[in-house]
Image (cartoon, rainbow, N blue to C red; front, side):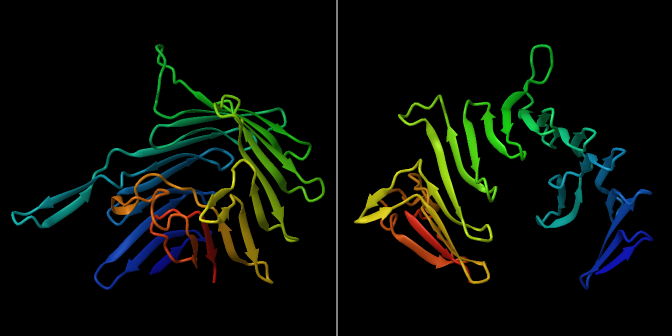
Amino acid sequence: MTVCLDSMGNEFLWIKDNGNEKLVTYRLFDAKGLSRETRDAKGRLIERKSYDMAGNDVLEETMDASNLWTLHDVMGRAGLMWRGQDPTWRKETHQNALSQVTYSQASDGSASRYSYNDAWLLDMIEANVRGEKSAAGDLLRKKYVTGVDYNELSHATAIHYGNGQIMTNEFDTLTLRLRKRQTVSPSATRPSKVMQSLEYTYDPTGNITLIRNNAQQDVFFRNRVISPDAKYTYGPTYRLLESSGREQLDNGSGPGGSNVGPACPGAFQTFDATSDAPRDGIPMSRYSNIDQ
């Protein structure tokens, strides 16, 4: 592979030779060294970007990689393939004076708007996912985050969601690490309004060693106690060696339509395997991954 650089050290040309053909990619930069366009060997646009005065990415256009046309001969063999030029996918972003994102629109048309408080911290998130509009033609935005409370160190202590749930965070006064996270749903129909209650334990370097889930109950099955806690074990160099926890049981069907619910043989067995061993979609009550 051959890579060409300009006077500013930017890669503007790639030539990849696989022995049969050469694949060429071109990139165009402006005077500030920002990437403006990327084209293939035939000059077709792959990506185009626009920036504001601060150098923030505000508009991105990409070709439709899935719009692939194929011409077959009488024997059904592919004789010619080419990509269509439209539609072109656009991704747009707006920033404020502090380069914080205030508006973003994805290539599928979904748009999000972000609001900040007087301290320039995120306070509200509104989004329009499916392009819903009012009778007047205006986009209808749903509030996913209605408010965020912060402490004196700008740590989020409470997040109010649009569905009524409230997530609170407690931090250690000495290490400033997250100590407890709790999510409460006032509209929950079950006796306990607490949907999530996690407590974190750390080692001296800040690695999480234990996550205690107080919102979930222990499961007793086949003379075993299955706790909802997650544990992590580290070596002398604080490299993760083993992680264990309780996997969410699934009452549906696994691969091939096999039953993987609580009645499935082995559904509540302890799982021990290296990190590269698959579990084949079978839910376990407790699992343990050993990293080597």
